[in-house]
Amino acid sequence: MSEDVSRDLGKWLDREAEEALRKIGIRMSQTVLDFGCGPGSYTIPAARIVGEKGRVYALDKDARALDELMKRAESEGLGNMRRMDTSGEIEIELENESVDVVLLYDIFWYFPLTDNRLLRLLAEVYRILRRDAMISVYPKHIDSEQLKDTIEGTGFHLKVKYSGVLIHDGKLESGYVLNFVKKV
Image (cartoon, rainbow, N blue to C red):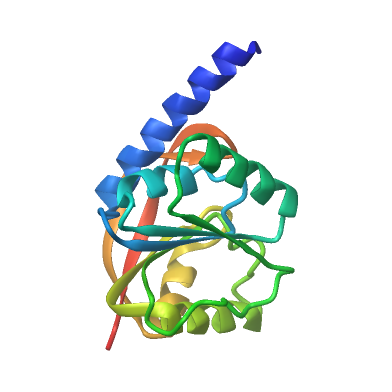
């Protein structure tokens, strides 16, 4: 694929991701954590939506992917993104009640439902979320009903299910995300 075609495809995927995130509820001036962001399929679009007064944290254990993502953010003038390297630990190095939205997209293959690390992750997400904040979950590769029950058992309730076009592994596909809000 030529560089021009690849760049145009990337821009098109970014527009699709931005549209999906707006429908899901990402708004200007919010603070968003993209947990397990990988190449940034949703990180860059989220940074565009929240604007200069917002902030997007890109957290991943793949340092090379984060290097590329931050280079791309810099080239696009997105100064509202912050890199968060992790070695896979559960602790999220953000202040209590400092985040409006956490994206948990296609990460549950890494946190199986029978693994206690999932409960620790959800407790950390609960800790960093502001009152009435949201987690948006793309339940790819997992039993979504069982995941929903697990999430609701840790202090969240399902607010809405969004069905539409999503990005997975650099391609568009039909899917859905579950948006949960923090119970207080």
